[in-house]
Image 1 (cartoon, rainbow, N blue to C red):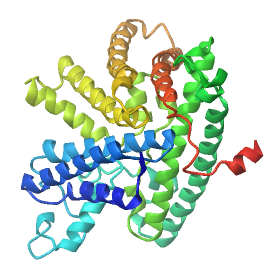
Image 2 (cartoon, rainbow, N blue to C red; image 1 turned 180 degrees about the horizontal axis):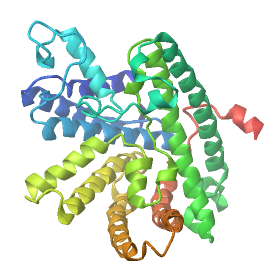
Image 3 (cartoon, helix red, strand yellow; image 1 turned 180 degrees about the vertical axis):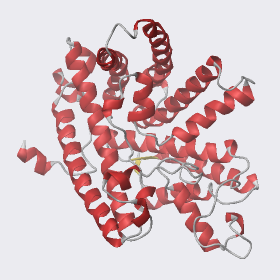
Image 4 (cartoon, rainbow, N blue to C red; image 1 turned 90 degrees about the vertical axis):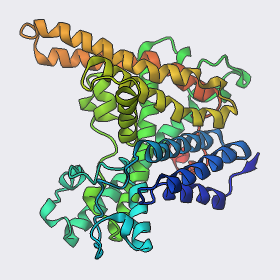
Length: 399
């Protein structure tokens, strides 16, 4: 396969950008979505980065673009109604559709690059966690010293994340839990993490895989935040943390809603609600509504990750573990709901910290059981070994 040219992938980004064109007419956005879909299909059919690890990341990234674009095109029919232009207004008012093209382009770039997807920072409920984390008062967020403190903190954090990312990559390269080349003659039966006999060893492998994913995504986000805020293109409060604290993950539901990244939360939740409310005519707030919403959201999450499966296997036949992993998560929600309801009857007999400790144990056991088949399928295609994006020579010498 031919190596993916950078210029071609720029066309993908441009098509994604114009999905956010501020107009109440659907046709321009449908046309942009069709162009994006055609470019992504051609990209995966003809091109490769010649490294399975990078191909997997690219495939998942393209899946994210496609889901976000589909949500913008088909689930947001009244776009841009309800979204306010935050820059200079025109004589016609603050309607983004009436702005000059240069300002429309600026608005599109800001929306397309929103880490939490559209709407989260434009409905009066913007998250300002980062400003508070670095001691930036909202009242002086525009102050240059506050901006400098934010930039310095993001640069330091990006260096820390880069170092952690490199160390986890070294572990993946040298561990038979992720690298099939370390098995006898490179032959394996598709069992990598599952070949571990100890549940604790499987848990540590899953944690180290997650640490690598978190550090890579945080490195990219913090570096971009430092650059954007440093040059004055955005404010600190526009860069909320991508991940939450692991201390909050004492249930599987809280892991997904409070700790793991929220990049696709808006399109996933609204798409699930759309299926439950408009498709199945379910009443919002009922147990059935929430189950359908969760199942839809995790089904779409699985579809996003099948882009990575196809990139490394050149087929969707190996996507079974991906769907099993994501569709099992609502089952964990249901188990937790039943367990919590039963625990309330004895809440006065057992201290709260005991329930919290049991919750952490439950989350660890759950992911140690359900994640390895999915991660092993990725490792079978080489998708968990990364060697090209960032050189490893320095860290190999230190190790």
